[in-house]
Every structure is written in C-alpha cells, then in structure tokens.
Image (cartoon, rainbow, N blue to C red):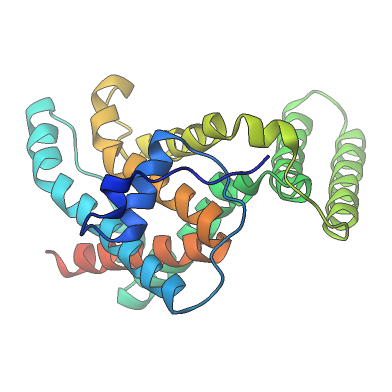
Length: 248
C-alpha cells in the first residue's frame, strides 16, 4: 500500500522549507506517496525550491570537482558539439531535448504503473531487437521482417496499454526504494560518457552532481508528477548551459 514517509516533529518545527524536510525524509525512506500535490501555488513554490536546490548543489560541487579533475588528470567535458551552433540551439538542446529524453528514460516509469513501465520498456526492447537484427547474419529480408514485426508489436502494446487505466503494481510499490535509487545511480552512470578518456573509477566522483540531481528529480517525479521533473531538469540544465555558453 502506498504511504508517505513520516516527518519528525523536530523537522516539522524547523525553519527549513517543508519541501526540503520532505525530501530528507524521502531519502531516508523512499515510498510512493498516496497522492501527488495538485497544481497550485504550493506546487509552483516547491518546484522552484527544488530547482534552487538542484542548481545550488551543482554550483557547490563545481570547485572541488574541478580541482579533483585536475589532480586526477581528467579532461573537462566537451560541450562544443552543442555550443557551436549558437545560444538558441544550446538552450533548446540543453533545456528541452536532453531533459525530455533523460526524464523519459530514467524517471517516467517511477510511478510503477504498468502502462508507464511498458511505455519505457517497449521502445528499449524494440531498440534491442533492431540492434540484434542489424548485427546478425540473417538476410536483409529476414532482418526487415523482424524489425517491422517488432515495431508493430511494440506500437500495439503501447496503444493497448495506454488506453487502460492503471494503478501502481504492488511488487513495484513494495520495492520502490530499490527502483528509486537505481534510477538515480543509472542517471549518474550515464553521464560517465562525459569523461571518455578517464577510467570508470576515477570518473565516478565527477558524476556526483548528476547523482544528486537524480535523487531530486526522482522525488519530484513521484511527489509532484512527471511535468515537475521535466521543469526542474529543464531549468537547471538551461542555467548550466547558459553559463557554459557565456564562458563563466
């Protein structure tokens, strides 16, 4: 059964904003909330505070991680492929395209509803099927049939499932904590690709900001909805890419 993580009396009486107290309690015991906060003034306030937290943590980690990267001989990430097309394209990619793809892959399914799980798993399965078909030794005709059949089956499953109302799978709710932390770790691990010349061990500290962001965004996903995660991710990325583009 879904439940909300308890907040201690000490935390409740603290001057720390309520959303930060709730986030701290959530980290100690991640559970799916019984209901999401509806769109309201409080929703916008909390989302703004989570944006501030995400960006502040990133900025606080910039200096020590920059020092550490120099000590370890790790090259800074190269964002030239994005920034070379100008400020508008940089913001479009950094604040819209990248967050949309990452939020879908790493957090859309965190509500545990079968249709959400399927919406993410089916395209991934189709992509794997495509990779296997293209990399095998079958004829072009057989490959084409496999790919087309797989894509049609994927589309049919998604359409069928999205039309059906869904509730959180009981097994997902029971083990939600594992899925929550796995999504944050997976999100951070995906950013190891920003350091292709470094070993995994030496690059791990470099993705600490992404790990923190993954924890914040996962919390926002289940407490405020998928749109909240998109908004937080997009604004934080937009601010970061604006700083990168400006040379700050």
